[in-house]
Image 1 (cartoon, one colour):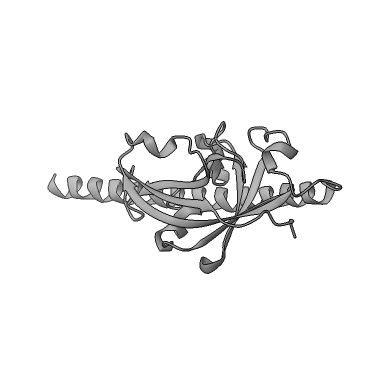
Image 2 (cartoon, rainbow, N blue to C red):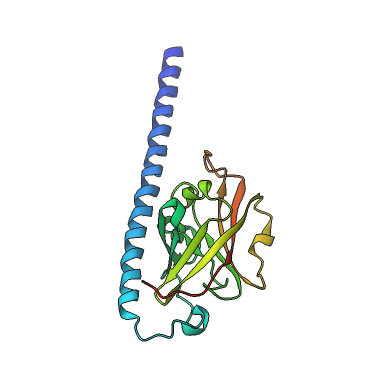
Amino acid sequence: MLNRIKNSFSYLLLAGGALLLFLGAREYIGSRAGQAEAAHDFQQAVETDTDIDRTAPYSIRVNPPHPGETFAKLIIPRLDTELYVIEGDDAADLRRAPGHMIGTALPGARGNCIIAGHRDTHFRVLKDIREGDDIVLQTPHGQYLYRVHNTRIVTPKATEVLDATPDPELSLITCYPFYYVGSAPKRFVVEARLAGAVQPAS
């Protein structure tokens, strides 16, 4: 009887481990496929978007993106990171890519441009970010340089990180701790300010 219980427990552990591996592989593959699709869409947008006044703020030159559209390319030079961002931050969106929170500021515009991402896929890189790092948001219409001025750890109830700001700012948000089994209890927030002029897209 005791051996049967031990065997059953062993099978449960194996099944649980296999399930975790499956879920992890699904998230990884989904994130890679989502980035490939977003990169393709972004390149198409760049190639078809010509004859635009690139000196005007992005929010003036274009209509807001539709949910699910590729929003921008997010570049962190020091961390050798390039990520494609889509419009929207629901569960399906964030499996594909970091997501721009609908209704928050567009690149270069006054206000808080908020982008969320998963700590175990796209935004794992944020564990190494630090004050003074440059973050570039490249859109099909131009690119915007932000500089990190603060990082902080907050609870999910700290909704002030979502507040609008009087100046152009960028907030990157992910769950915390980065290495945590299950639903992480806190949030890691990167806060950056617009630094410098709008540059043409390359």
